Amino acid sequence: MAAPTPDRTTADAQAFDHPLLQGFLAYRDFLATAEWPTADVLTAALDRGVDECSAPIRFGAQTAVLLADGLHYEQRIAQRGVIATREHNWHDLFNALIWLRHPQIKVALNARQVADIAEIGPKARTRGQCAMTQFDEAGAIVWCADPA
Image 1 (cartoon, rainbow, N blue to C red):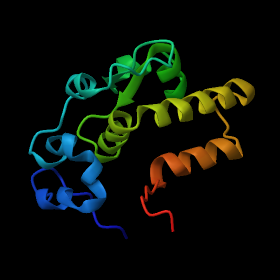
Image 2: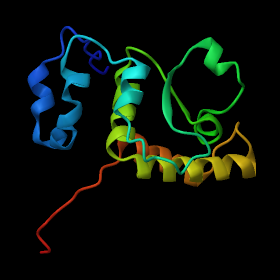
Image 3: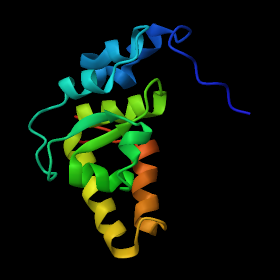
Image 4: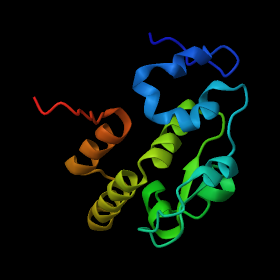
């Protein structure tokens, strides 16, 4: 059985100083402080240059009201620019950090997901969608300055 996810008060703030997270130093407070960032705080940190979607991108607290629009998660981003974000949730916080740090990658993944949804509907997933989700949630990109 996996270890439980630490809550904000028991998470070791020094863990967020690990070299693998060096690219996220500008957002360290979102991880290492006792307070969870709200959707509005995350939106304020977004690169306002992300304009590839039909609406300006923003984070929205994932509530019953938000979900009542009936849109698939990816469709909501593409059509309304709203990234449904569960409050007090590590998974969604790390997703937000990737949106903050690499918005062009997230927009490209979203566009491909939406294209597949348009082709087969929101209830099933293509192999491509599964691969994109695997990359999006567990993948890594490694930058290396040494050409050897």
